[in-house]
Length: 116
Image (cartoon, rainbow, N blue to C red; front, side, top):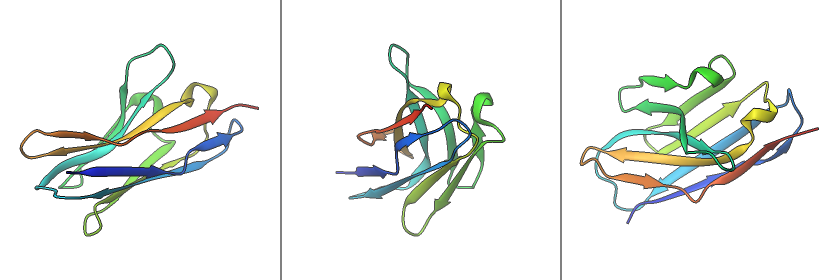
């Protein structure tokens, strides 16, 4: 069973920074992509950014230039550096893994709150 464990959420003022990390463990078949989604209250879960096994990234327009994803392929970890945070970035952030059998795995979620 694959497990994704996130860390790094919290409360930050507008304009501040946070770094999220996610570690995958368990029986993992070949990873297609890893990434982050977020869900604000009353809204659907949306893609923030993903990175493929080949290093291709896909950022949501709302975070381009502010967020950066990085991945350690040997350790099956992925991190999200979030800079210039805005109140509209407030959400629960979920780590996501897609394997080549099209199985989706999710972390438990970590709360990010941007508020003064």
